[in-house]
Length: 287
Image 1: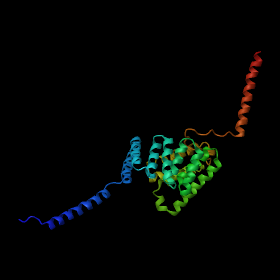
Image 2: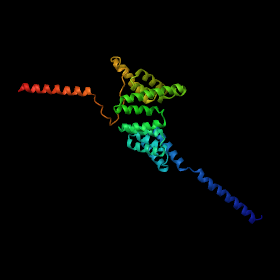
Image 3: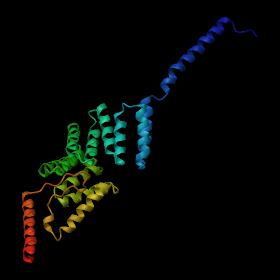
């Protein structure tokens, strides 16, 4: 058998080098880049959040951010997980990181408003909701939360205007997209919350019932329906409760004191004066 000639060896060597060059170029492309690796970790963290394993999820989100610190999506998800364990200042920081990367992330603005609200920073929360609404004017939850924070700031008239706007937009969406509205429990719940705060309890009950029909496990809709049912039950003996706007259902830590009306201040002073007279009269008789 004849050994391969030098020309044949050169041909095989050239072919081998070409194959190695192709593999050398393809292998880096086949490997995961940092953004993909980080997003894969983020999705695993999402699964942990669904299982309510929030601390483990936070650790994974932080790992993902260490790999890719430029993902506004992952920063936003980290903030939501921080909120689930009550770490609201950390959540605000995470949401702000997301917004530094993407100032038009309406969800991050809304979430930042929720975190600020939880800390009792109502005006700052309103400012964040306004930024979310400037990007997405149809964000019913941001609009509803803005109304709640206005109410907590002692501005009920402004809050009622906002709640009415929530109802108007919700009804418009039902007319425009009836098929989608049939499956949107959040839309009906936001409408129910707004109607309840406007004192339109029978309508609120219908909205909550629609939400629960779509999603029987929707906790916010169930809670709202129970609250409205209780109000309607008590109204049987006190009809004046109907068509009376209610206060926010939950009072976060750090709520501002309820402003006193001139009438209540006057009554308090009168009671104090009468009580003082009664005490001094008793002492005067004993002398």
